[in-house]
Image 1 (cartoon, rainbow, N blue to C red):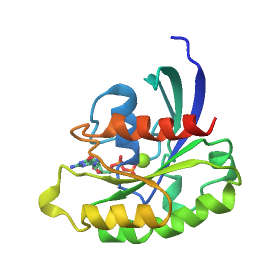
Image 2 (cartoon, rainbow, N blue to C red; image 1 turned 180 degrees about the vertical axis):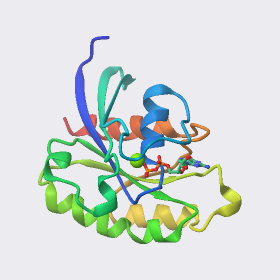
Image 3 (cartoon, protein in one colour; image 1 turned 90 degrees about the horizontal axis):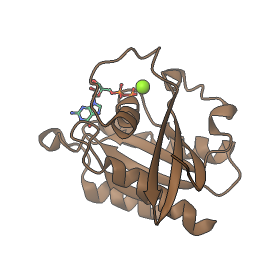
Length: 171
Ligand code: GDP
Ligand code: MG
């Protein structure tokens, strides 16, 4: 499939928030609940039309690197879109969002589109962070925001499209 733009997207956030599941849901359209942390696929691709432009998404997964807070400069290099993910059922993962944001800003000088993602919204009964709290953090830091579920696929495609649309506005 031909495309107008290729965009590098990276997915960051604490271990276990669902980064790999989000990548697999977006690229394979299915939920793979169990996978080996260390041999997770490092890339995924999918072409989606955004505002009448076919965009080829090249999505990078940390594949376990984040455990050691050792995400390399090359991971960030050239990224146009960033998915910064927390787990709505674990407060600790939300508390770390600010330091992940610092890490992004340290590594990247150019203007990127960053979306804050509250994943696992299918687990509403176990929720530890309200949607409003997530929304407020995003607003204060100039980030896009969505709650999604990599399990049910709710808002997963929307998250990528919303971020790509924001990137297109800057081109
Ligand atoms: P990563 O370490 O950030 O890459 O997280 P994973 O993608 O490996 O997911 C961690 C765990 O959360 C796995 O057990 C997944 O099955 C589970 N998980 C991921 N996304 C969701 C979701 O949207 N809903 C639910 N209920 N579980 C999820
Ligand atoms: Mg992973």
